[in-house]
Length: 261
Length: 303
Image (cartoon, rainbow over all chains, first blue to last red; front, side):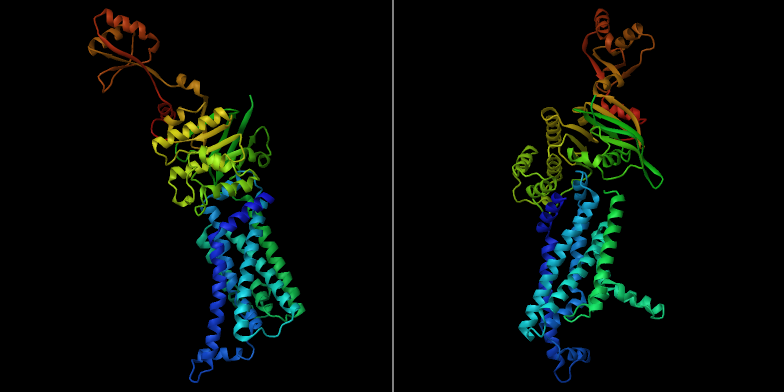
């Protein structure tokens, strides 16, 4: 197992997709902060575009820590994680290199789990790059804001757990679909459209049960704050664990049965 | 006899279509087993099952006398279908990734194997910029990592020029002779396979058609006698008198091919000379593996 892990980390180090997506997290973090600052400045001008009115509501709250939570809830970094995982995993099938691993007696369950572990590490690195970039850039422009160490740590840990849950889901999707384009599309849809879809389905049932509350994206939004409610934290941990474990178990079972071309 | 690979009635069913239908083969230690079949015959599917890339739907496979295949596969090197490489990595980096997977600590192994495969000087050139021949060689080098005892090579000479084909053939021969590596190899170039294989298996439509030793090939192939002489009519007359019902065939090279009768060459020569025919040459001619394969396939299909 250790050998597979070493080999996967070697591939990660050599993966262009990883470095490009990490760089995009950094660049996107800076661009978003600059864009927000520019939007707020324009919103304060007389005769501004009415679309910018929502920016006015943010002005009294804005700080580095506030922006961190605000941008995390939008899931930008998760989109890059989804793209990276899809490219990293599906390329093993499109190049046929998965054959080199499996034909030498590597256990398929271990191969799947290690893919998840390595993608998880990459996802956390990308998330931290995004978080640090947003926090630093936001602090430079608006100041750090008021945040306790425990509040910050809580947000980072819960968001990390939710990112790992997303990564498990992306790993499952990519290992099952095996086609780069399709896996990228589905992974992005999981981040951007799943919440909307679940909201719509909830409305179909009269809005009595909000399905989005049980989805990773819903938990990401709720926990993208430095002062989360303890109930939300517990719910977030349960959601992340349940989705992550289900994706890994289903993925392992499917991968064990599937032929590799 | 020690069998490296034994398949017992192995089958693979793809949604009702039998790609491999109750195939049993035996590969002895030290064999170069030439696996022959037309496109879609089931060669690659069987090799994929041996290498753990597909599960049989029936039958069983034994590697090194052991049915726990996962535990034995570290002793097997494979190249199945197209070369499977990381295109953004160099040859050495591709080798290093595989070294880590196999737990090989000695990093000197990689350059040595690359040299052996004839791609030692590729330096920083990425695998995506390699020719198909270079990729094939790199795949063979990769499959040799971890000192495998058994190599499964699916059309390893695909895309190689005649020089490259000869080099790879010689390389496989050396691995077999010097290192005692057993090889299961499929190739569409039957003439090439004929130069190295010690045993053959012929598969068609997913079913095993024949399995034989290389030295049995001549017995299975038809033998003819080709006579080059100054008077072909006289040759026909003399030979016709000597052997009742003998079959002739005129060749484009102005000679006569007699079906069989290779063992009578001396007698035929003497008789022809005695009757005043100048015999320029009298050559035994046998069917090649390709001819035998085409006969087995009914003469219509291609390998």
